[in-house]
Image 1: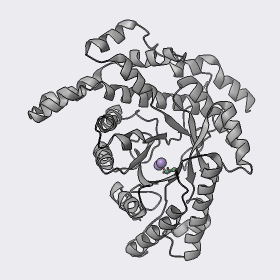
Image 2: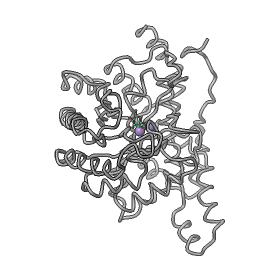
Image 3: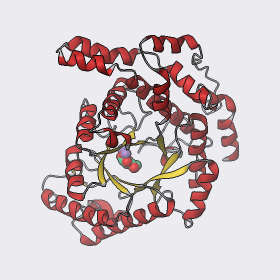
Image 4: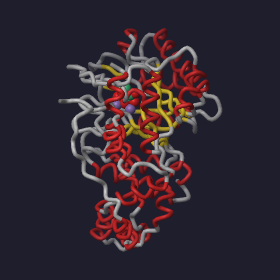
Length: 409
Ligand code: RM4
Ligand code: MN
Ligand code: MN
């Protein structure tokens, strides 16, 4: 039977202390590495817990969350099992409620908090020709008002991030004035930026395709960075790993944004062909590791450490054919794994061989860390916090999926 009750046997993660010894023998200081791993917080998205699908069909998943309270409950369960996900991002209007303080308290009672507030500028009929870039000033005003409401919501829920993705763009050459649209964008976001209270950041996401087919108005990291520079220091770029052309070097984008103090956060997911929103690290775990390598390097560099330490690690996924909760837990594990591997890179050795121009040895230094089994580290991390050594397995064997399917029938 397809569904959460299927009893697939999963490989047990080794709790063998020998694994940790192997890591120690590489010269890795295990305790500080565990301390770094413990600091990694990953925000999960409310919209990742509900049913989702493609434009062809949405397959209902037994027990999938249906309300904002259920989505928060699920996010809290992911946090309880992983210890790494203390906040949940919300999407407005999907998660809008009348009483925000009730929702804040509910999240607290579940052991998590509300994180980034994501405006929705793509589901109203008026946005056919765009939101902030729409040729009609009334529509632009509506988009701005919606975002201003999201700023207020951020205040009401104690969130420090408003995270913006525009579906704006054009389908045909000549359809609209590209420079004019950019001007509207900068003007509108300027008003939004001016309304941000202290301590709230605006993260600007880019995507080079979809839903517009000819030109999207924030197509790439360069455009997003340019807009952020025009706005001010509390506007930063959000890198959604599914929003690039095939074979784009995402880690180089990450490196440059870090260097310029412009990297605000991530929307992690994996893609094969388009904006597939698959489990992060499922298609190309080496890419995820390469991104983490740049982040760890930036954390160790005094000129970029503060930016790197402030990065908001968020997941943006929709799970169409798999169980939502276990997909989210697996995603968290994949991010932790990539980060742990990046922490193992011998940076001094790497710098030396880079300086010496030893191309192959430098490359091997990276690959060597990537190929190291970091599961013993993650098991040790979890053991120290009384967490299950394999949170996916713990979810499966605990009966949560069956319980939720019953309760939400
Ligand atoms: C977009 C983008 C946004 C997300 C929406 C649902 O492709 O990734 O971040 O909020 O999808
Ligand atoms: Mn996204
Ligand atoms: Mn996306």
